[in-house]
Image (cartoon, rainbow, N blue to C red; front, side, top):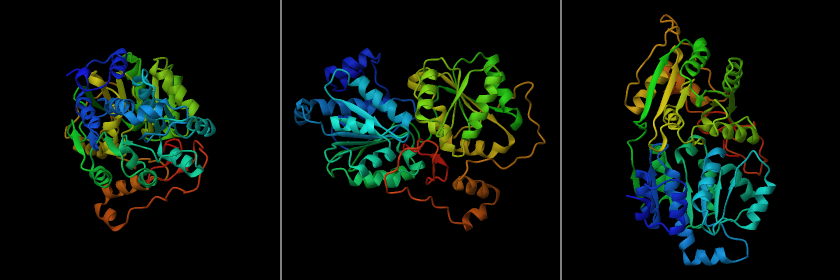
Length: 453
């Protein structure tokens, strides 16, 4: 079924065509008519399947063709925010807003994106001029709400994008504060890469008789992605990665590490090997993050090293290689990481460098995705079969991760101790400061920037 059969207006179809798309993906072909119908929606699909267009296209259509909305956009007075899209990270928020502008280029609607790590005053001025569609990270949106610089009383459509990631990052309190400021009568759209029980619980309290779309099995990985594991000793990971990049002539590689320090260290090591690399994580300034991501997208940067903050915020056409330098603490993050390749039907390759310390993590991942990943030992990098596992170095403040490791070592111990509770986010306005650590409900340390500040 082509886009022309989905009921979208001519200006939107023209923009889609100019962008090179003619046929919607499965999530788009199901979600677009559901959103156009005006009801609530709970939609899940693998990363890279086109969820963003699945909600931006029908939102643009509804706001531009609604009689009241058309009158609003024709007035010279500041426009009211009619659609609010919440995203967990700066990078994802920026990309969603870019999609809104791309698909809405022939419409009279306008949009803005607000997130932390940058000055708030330009955002205030933009909001004063009026915005139809606002894309925001929860932390920075709350800052504006507390300062009285944003008005959400006219919102007609709310979107929670990557809702599972927002829950992972401890945004549930922030989301509830935002919901309290919205009109009770509105359309709610909840999009998620995975359908956990927590997501369904959130949906039960937020959505009203929603349509439900799930175009892939829970926590499944895109079949077109080639996945494999390279067993290796922990101190040989860096040489192996350099070897793989050079011998295979990889020109564009996204590498995931477990910690910010590990990302910085790996970049230094790769640069010494003559491999151009940059890091992107919560302690980096927004300028540095934007520069690294831009150069990587333009293929000027060979290797981008990222922590899990970027797993949901990097959307690059035809990205060929993703490497798990460290396996993630949370098995679901594996799905999101490798979902950066194999997007929109393109092929991709996901490689995991696994040492003896990560064998349990690998088992957890394979249990989640319901498949055993093929192992391939690289000649010259054969692992020491007598090596003993050591405790994984988790991010500072990762109480949840520590408890998880303790439960693996002693299941009874995990039941005896209650989970450590994260401190709630301050209710008062706070300036965005990249690198300032804030606890989150999953227990992992995260900077204001990473948390969507």
